Amino acid sequence: MITPEMAETILASRGPNRQVSAPVINKYARDMLAGRWLLNGQTIKISNEGRLLDGQHRLEAAKKAQCSFPSLIVEGLSEETFASLDIGRKRAVSDILRERGESNTTSLASALRWLWMIDNGVILSANSSPTNGELLDLLQQNPEIRGSLKHVSPMRDMMGGGIAAALHRTFSRKDIVKANEFFARLIDGVQLTEQSPIRHLRERLIRTRASHRLRLAEAERVAISVKAWNAYRESRPMHLLVWRNRGAGREALPSVM
Image 1 (cartoon, rainbow, N blue to C red):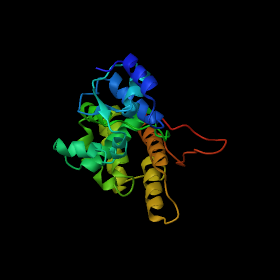
Image 2: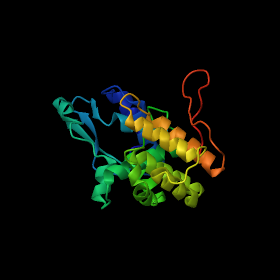
Image 3: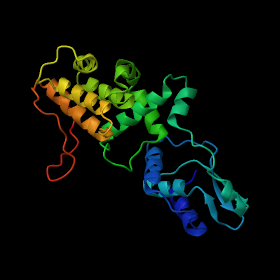
Image 4: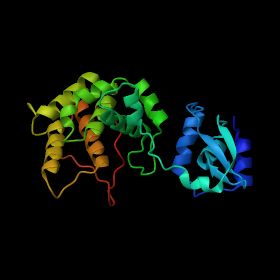
């Protein structure tokens, strides 16, 4: 078990081996604090000249979280070993989901990622991303996301399947009946009045998809969908659906009502 004190000693005496990434350290630290960090065979590697070859981010995370983590330490490796590290493809959460017998794993992984960002309020944060452990925990806490993916599958081209499923799950937590109605009408467009928030959202998404010049950014898709949902849930007529994210009238990302 490597304690924060041991991590600090190794980092101080063995020297850093590369520039660290703060987002990576933060992700590792969250997993350590949540007890998700398991002994998986990855080692802290130290060369025969006493230089730290691998494990810098894990050690920095232990310092940041002030949390111990299990790991083996391998010493006496050749300095040339450093060139062979981190050359394989990192295992994505979709790979882990596939190994666990899930279906549509790419879409499910995307839905979980968007749900995590919505739940943590980091849609607009470029440097915030979940760990695989956080997404697997989220799936355990929200098994309904599988049903959400099926429910909104026709929205894949119009909104993006991952975004649509995450929004359906988010809205369902507030009112599952209305969430189902919201997406059903968004898909088929049946009996929508001129001032229907769903109609405004549907037309905006269709218009943007059909244009070769316009592209609706993902954050804006989330924002206008939440605005339309809030108005629909509160039975408020809508005359204009817009989210201003630039200039003096810039708006924060709306919260789900």
